[in-house]
Image 1 (cartoon, rainbow, N blue to C red):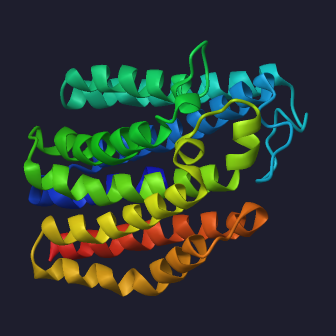
Image 2 (tube, rainbow, N blue to C red; image 1 turned 90 degrees about the horizontal axis):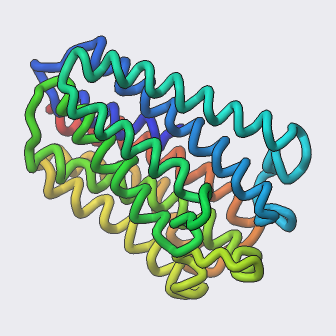
Length: 269
């Protein structure tokens, strides 16, 4: 959920005096609905492919047979529908270009592990997450309130995208061995154990660098989150694996939410 909330918070703060409460709420609703939808669709698609049969991470609904595959698929469709309905209202209030963004977002969410050629199985998941839960969510939130696109908003979207990617990176490091066995060529599988851990460190570092580039000296306040970030970096870099990474996933989500709040405050100042 922090991956859906954080970019909307930052995009809304960037709108400044032009912020519009209804558009901000709808952007948040769309983002959350898409996050729920992509999780249900991934659960369904991975479950029917058998990818989750030997899962290390938290329980998946389809693979564990806690619910039927069809009911999980229906839950994904309902979530996509809710996101679409709110998105249409948002487009009416702002610009019909938002519809194109919505269609692209839904296609990306479903195509991550769904369909005949899921791009998540080819190591492109992090790129998609960066684009949609970073750039599109942040700049899109800013746009629907201001009807403008700025480099400032784009730069501010990079930390959001990097932190969202770090969530996926931990997931993929945790599941790397199992994914490789079933032919799921995630970026962690392609980079190998050491490379994928260094990539996680790079994402956290990029978060702070681009935060500093996106505003005034007030963005130094984001360094207040280092006590949350540094233990994560240290544990991942030193080789935490499998079930040891599950609590680190939650800690990364906490880092993203706290970072986004402090980052938003610094941008407001």
